[in-house]
Image 1 (cartoon, rainbow, N blue to C red):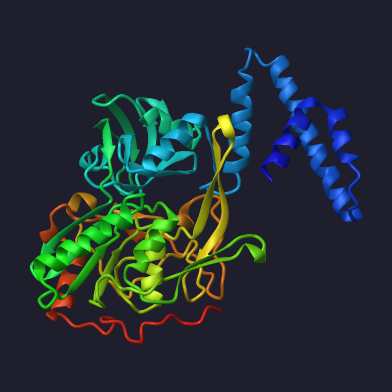
Image 2 (cartoon, one colour; image 1 turned 135 degrees about the vertical axis):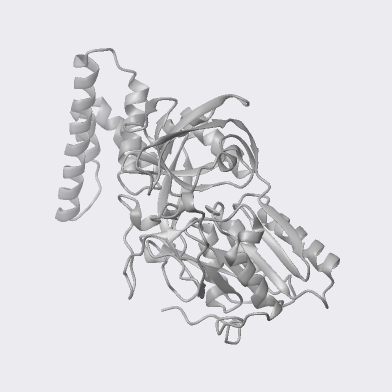
Length: 446
């Protein structure tokens, strides 16, 4: 498929003669298909005409490679907010990031209305320490307007040598005027899993899903179980708040750690034969201990796969606020020496057959944080439904949801959601949603 697409693009640049040759290939198709193909070739010819006019008449001599890259990126970004072209450098940076170490500020971003939107700051990174919040819009980078840049171009400008400063201008809901934030670049080493003992409860924080995540989770469970003791251990809190997601296989592995059987997630592409189902293997690493999963408006993608799987199997209670609502799967397609494309190729569905696209995971127990005065009305994110060009929600209940609190207090003593989870596990508070009712099996997909 990639070769065919590349061939058509080359044909357009070669002119009408080459396109005519392609159109006359001896392929038996219906009149309708023939007409559609002819229309596509005409559009490609139009692209070739515009490209040649720009090359010959633009006020300055343009860079042909940049023109083509911009055209490709424009085509992809018009599909949805998560499809894009990656230059060779961006592709290399992405590969490094998924391994858990990269240079930058430490924020997961997307585009919204031509501006860079912060999906989530990553724990213990320069951006998080500088006070950047989920939902912030970056309007300028070192005084240069973001409007007009692609997402990859904006990300490139935010990267740079370690220990150099960058000034980002932020527009934040509830603040009348944009304001500047100075951030010192650093090497971002992502330890995706951190854990600690809360007396008789194990607390495990997953900040993103990279290649180290499932191994980190296993280490955390083993150490907590050993240090607290199986008899004393009341259960586990899995904190996925402000976790922007990451690798699908890691989300599946994390879910599998708490399940003995059943489907974890399914992905469905444009064609029925592209459906894939991923199932749990026998062996619950926690030995069936109670689990509470914390989510909020910054919990996206892979985080929602884990929360949805454990919720549908009634293996865990989901506590917090509605999640981000990113229910699509992106495939990275390498283009040899020309970088890669990130293309949305499927939607994912929870074990009950529910798509959370533009809806998010609704917590079993909703709990709001108490916001400090300077953040009231500001610590929220619009979620996937607030992104221009997002894939629409589907299913019986296709109502899109946007707007969810995405604030986590820096001091655990002020963390309302964490405190409630601890109280539930210890029996200090009682709620009908904990422990989950049922036999631990998921509803039959519809």
